[in-house]
Image (cartoon, rainbow, N blue to C red; front, side, top):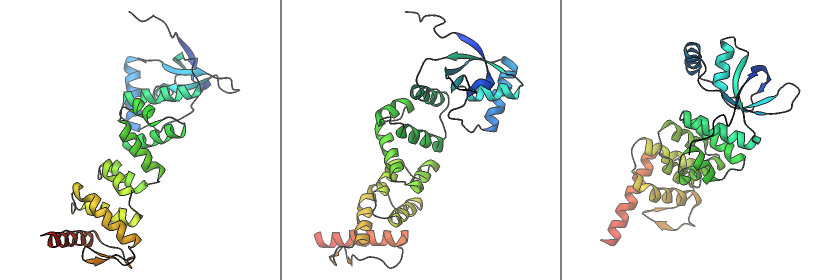
Length: 247
């Protein structure tokens, strides 16, 4: 069945009457590319807005900030637009869907988008559907955001740390333990399969174990920060001690 034509008629509206609800910082190179494309070929796609009733504005932007900025730079004051009859929340989701579908945002932008959607009450499954990422991935990101794990998130953003390891590190008892694990992983001193056991050693070392002896050392609260190399030595000694007991 063919879609109905002119379901959403295109009209010309004044750019000055459009309100930007969630303005984005535009990369200068991308801005110039959009401007040059419009200058050569014209505007290939109208923007989307919804009607509002304010003293200074008649429309709220849904999609098309880059196109508006490019036309303004070219001296235009009118732009083709489609007026959508949707709520503010639906307009926000529509804006996200278009921007994510049109270009994969940078990791820090994506994290902010996910945080905003969570604040607006969207579930992990809804965020998953919008972003195209799995529900487990979204849940992990939200867990890190909720815990305020900015260092770990930054490591994930830079590509220095896989997300699943960031989640494991976030479950450490202290930030110091996280830092040691991150350092050890960054130096390639530990393998992924050893993370849980090493994290257990760190957590026990941090909280203490009432003087119980295990793995060749006494658990106690440390007086100084352990280095990544000392952690690996401790782990290897633990393995050796375990083997000597059971062999």
